[in-house]
Image (tube, rainbow, N blue to C red; front, side):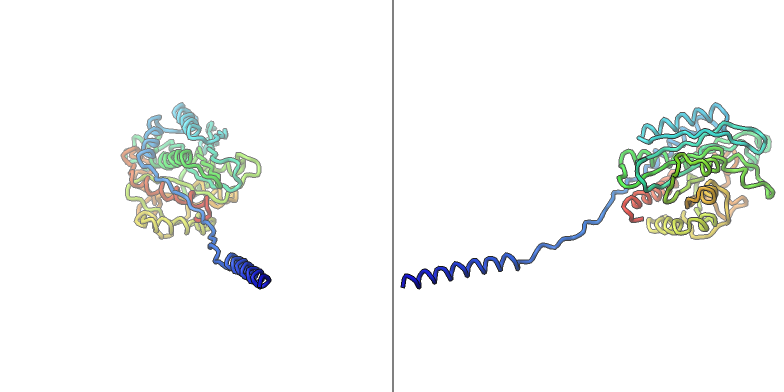
Length: 335
């Protein structure tokens, strides 16, 4: 009987071990899920952008070669540096159609400069030397303040620089490029396109770093006016059509279809033309350009009415928020 008791105890013990092991091995394992990347898109502050435009205008017309132009350049460099950008100032001589040679500066503010994946955000920061569209013919040869035409795009980008400083991106590099000598060309059907966008032409041929590449670029020009229509220009469509569609579709999804029109507008010579054709980097232009006015642009274009009264804060907010959303989504490959 002793043997039986021992055998029975051994049997019970082995049975318990067996079932214990079975339960352990067959119990359902917790499901593992792949954590998706998310990013918080910061709110674009229209009042800040407006103040940055106001500051530019306070220097006076920003025509290359003038004291006012240099003072504004120094402020822009200082402001970008204060927001943590590594700033490169690219000096060049702008050969104006008049025969003048003006000292000019492209300003490049680099965020996360070691990142291989990069996006360009660009605008021109000079203002026009004449006001050929002004109704007051006695003032045609006076330079304009360029609050919208030049100032608005820069104001939006300086605000984005502030947001990048406060909300750094880990996996994406941003290059804010402020092109100079964009608006000093001669108008006319027989005039060459190369009269315009001299800073963009220079940068496209002499990038600020050897072997520099960017995935794409977004150009802002005249993005502060009242009741704007940001049509889809044909140059952007031809060279950066996929990017254009994504941006405009996102703007519509964000509720901004009243500004971002799906209408195709004509070709336009702007900084993006030379970045696309010379540098080979796809760049789209967000510009208040449509076929509903005589010039194709806002009524204050190339006139002395292009002052702070031409600026609408709501427009700044819309454009700024769309571009901000694009780069923050790009940082997690969701744009």
